[in-house]
Every structure is written in C-alpha cells, then in structure tokens.
Image 1 (tube, rainbow, N blue to C red):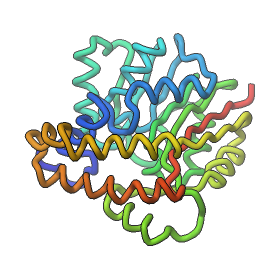
Image 2 (tube, one colour):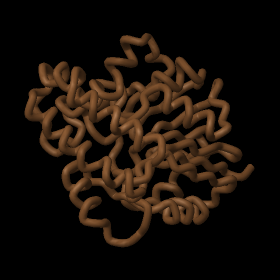
Image 3 (tube, rainbow, N blue to C red):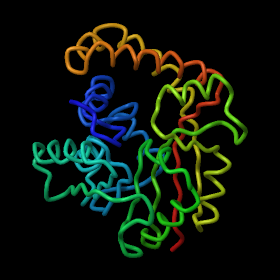
Image 4 (cartoon, one colour):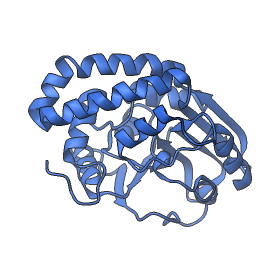
Length: 263
C-alpha cells in the first residue's frame, strides 16, 4: 500500500475512504447518495450510455449498472491505482461487458462529439480547476437531449478562502480547485446547457460528516488502522475535524448539479 509517486488516491487512501464510505466508494454517501443524485436529476439511465468523469475505485459505476440499469458505463480517471481497483471490482461483479474503466490525461475528453446519453460525475470535478473548459467538453460529448448528472464539492463564494477553509484544504492535500455555485452555473450556461439545477447538500453532509468522524474515532478507525496504519487514520481524523467547521459555516458546500443539452 505504499503511495505511488504523483498519485493522490494511492492504496492507503483508497483503503481509508472505503472503510468510511463502502467498497469502491471514495466520496460520501455510497450507493444511497448516488441514488439521490440520479433521482434528483430526473434522469432515466435505463439502457443509456454513460460517461463517468472521475470513476475512482469503481463503486459508482457498478451502482449505475446494478441499481439504475445503465446500458454501458465508461469510467475515466487519471490515476493507475484507482483504475486497477475499479477494474478488479468490476470483474468480480461480472460486469466487464457493461463497464469499461480507462485512463485519460487532463484536457479535452478523448471521445467524438455526441456519443453519450449521460455524463455523470460524483465529487471529482473539484480536481479540475477550469470549470468552463470542462463543461464545454461535457456539452460536446453529449447527444442532443443528453444530460449532465453530477455532484461536487463547492466553495460558497469566489473570494479568498477563510483561514479555516484554507487550513482544511491544506490538510486534504488533494489539489482541490473549488469554485462557487455562481461559477458552476456560469460555466454551464456558457457551454449551452439548459434546465440547470444546483441543489446544496451542505445540510445533509454537516450531519453525515459528524457521524463519519465518530466512526473514525471508534470501530471504523480501529479496523482501518489494521489496514492503512494508525498514523493515517489519525491524519484523516484531523481532516474531518477541520472540515466540520467549514461545513457549519457554509463555506464548504457539497452540491448536486444537473443540466440538459438542447435537442
């Protein structure tokens, strides 16, 4: 589980986050939050082709097929370790014919125009600083009438982060490129999307994060320490303790995003 040079989501990180959120999941809420995201976007994934930007360890893509009947999911990510984990879980689930996980490099999406019904992303766009360029690419690869269904970690404003927020972001150490709801909306509008909806999940995650911290300080942390080491568990407890105050202030605002390409 030694970290791979240049990777943020190395083996220890994957093991830590899966201990909190479930096998294959690297962001809050697991399958339940995926279901809430899909339902809230009023999108029907049955039989649809889906691009998942930032597929991580694969749990989301498996849920999109098993729980929401997606026809085929193409998961993309930029790191080898998470992709290896995703491919292993997909193979174990017997879904290799309906889920593909491929490595990409930052920049334009490596797909022709209009080739996906749905572009999905859960808490990964935070790693992409140029929201306008990304939304233009999402718009390009969607078919007419296709939908963006996403969630992400936003900051509540476009000013310099508060001292508490800066301390939290530094503790995460994960190249966050956070933007405000206004910047996300502007990026989607500029790309050409319509029916744009942003729904804050701050109230939900304020409560959920406290439950996660209690579990980290208790049995989940004890179990995780045997896999990733007590030092890494304590490091993550410190991150959660820094995160909760900025959730309480509203400066950290997880948000659901949805929009439609005209047609």
